[in-house]
Length: 387
Ligand SMILES: Cc1ncc(COP(=O)(O)O)c(C=O)c1O
Image (cartoon, rainbow, N blue to C red; front, side):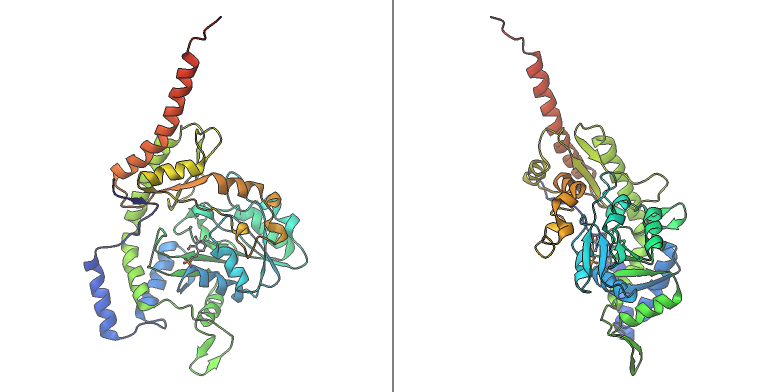
């Protein structure tokens, strides 16, 4: 059996490169609480991303929980069912009511045309996700938010480094939240960041992520422990040196898939909008009815050959037990999300993906289609026996 190929593999620098950072931590004995590496990484990251203010945090989920707290969101929040479950769990942890709205079948992001019908007097915010790093229709969403006085919090867990014509897409909405989880394009083992519009908001979030302390003896809010440790921050600082190379390797992998699979009957390769600087964080394909076998059969066939593609996002968040009885979770309300959850398959993509391993993935996906085409041709060429 060939060696297994997973959907992703974390980008790691050479271990030797990290040792001096560890030595520094051991020397200064500051392990957390906004130490020197935290401060350096925060500044360097803001500069890299092209944003002015951001607050590092221990992971993306706590970032979302904290962002919702910072904005004082109450009542109902409109969100997408087509995401990782943390997007909605962050709402439940704030005792907020998720209201699921269907996705656009082409972008798989929240469909702005469906948002207004879901707004009630209790709605206070929208929580869209830039799914796979593909930019949401931020203009339409902001227009709706402005008209109804709603806050917008982007779950930008997949959107590290993505830019549109105006710059980083993390500038949109009231707040955006990144994840630096091990599986993400940019990882700090665990970690995240909240992108803030101004210094005052950042300061508020800095207090919230540190139990609500504003000084040694004053606690102004019931904050949480959402701080990033010095080890994670030091690692992030080192990772920034390698991220551009990692992104261009991912771009190469993405281009090879597109070239090889773009023409396969029944497969649809999602693509980012033109004019974007993209991060190639995932390679999602939709396995449609014209492909000879179902998505699940292809998933299994790949697994049988040691290739661990993933069905992101299946099941839908709306199908998990804590959500499924909510009125907006009904499949009739979410036809495009339900279909995407049945058809999507994310193929392996990471910077160190070997050419021969990618070739294995491509060969299997194409073989299925080619065999079916040959069978169809053979069936058509059989001369019918006329009695
Ligand atoms: C869309 C989305 N939102 C939120 C998260 C949560 O981020 P974290 O794992 O850093 O808590 C993730 C990934 O893990 C994600 O993919």
